[in-house]
Image (cartoon, rainbow, N blue to C red; front, side):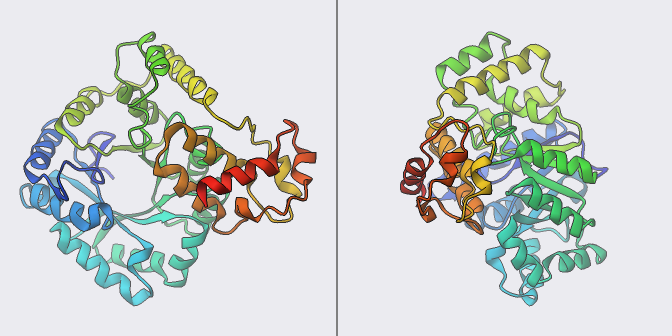
Length: 366
């Protein structure tokens, strides 16, 4: 990790495109600008752009610069291996696609309670640690999407994990469906540095409602991306903050304020808090996530988490809420599993019509 020069990284999931293909000329210019400004961390995965992210990096980065100029992270995704014997050939195919002999970081991708079982059954963690001993990867870690309790269990079982990649931004920080703060605190407890993904929540924190933009403007001159990325980078233990930049304008803007990084001022933090309050007002379900409803549910439905997913969907209308709905119902009850017993409503201090709301959630996500 000593080669990391600055804590801002290039996430290569949303690259400049020409139709279905990566705009290699534009991407090369972005790579050049990124490196010229003193940054050197690139993040990819085989599934990004149907494999085109890895090969674009070979064309625009690894074939054009010496290996010591950049840090490259790739990931092992569950859909690309069925048994342990599949992992090494897949790993080698990733090296070949990227045009390198080793990865600086290799992450077990999108870990949650469900696919962690698959990784364990195929000894994926053990295989990655063997590859590290062989010098084919330098640092071993995970990217993670689930509850803090699940993360704590994984880090306890595999203390060899060196780094954790988390979804972390000022909106998700206290969101009960994403649990950014709680997961971050688990990482701090285990002494694991954090790589931040989605600091701008897939671009949603750069495309804010007018009231939210006015709140930011009242407390400073920075653009929305500056507030979002600098919020995440300002926490202790943050090794890297990734941004998925898809054009040169985004690249120039982001390297401009991250080249000489300064954390948010107290006034800027107040602006961020105001934006969170404005977005929260747009939520449709006033659930406080006290979880009193969960304890007595015979179908084990994670009701507050599903309500939080619904609220996120109403605000942002993107894939992220659907993804987390799948995470939180993978091994627990779905909204449609409700048997209308009413125990949840008897326990709810907000007196919410939970049974009716679960019907709405099921219609939205199922």
